[in-house]
Length: 161
Image 1 (cartoon, rainbow, N blue to C red):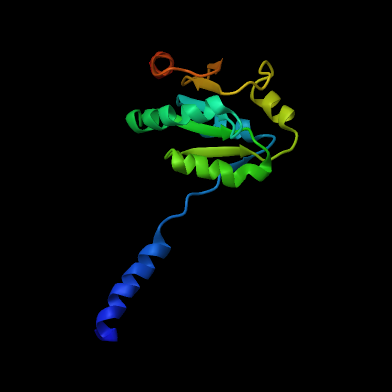
Image 2: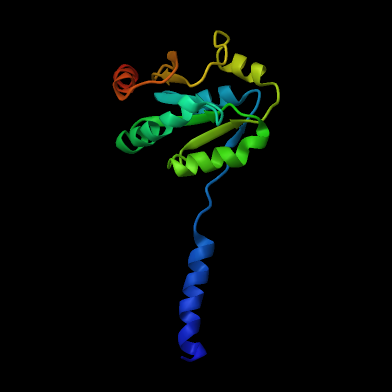
């Protein structure tokens, strides 16, 4: 085989490998980020899922969240990893594995996690998983613990009406 015949194939493979879009790392969640999320989602319902790489219930929930994301594209889902800033690589791997890396993702980027959780909800004590459902007026309902598909569907009915 001549170089003329091999080169186009090699060029195609090279370009394909290097043009695959890399998944963006989660945005750094710092003081003021919660208000930024609210502002950027003004007048639209959404769900904020707070999770952690160290929360076994959160990790079990990922498959269901991925399924919901695929089956309910009209619902805006935002993920927030409540982990140390050094866990970014693990967070990204879990999101990619569960096909959730392409949605809006945030991760704690401040060591003062209590301050961040207070900004989200002064009545929240940090238990995970924690899911917030916001209607169009941003009236929110916070739920701690694992939710079933039926629980999610009931909450979606409330916020999407």
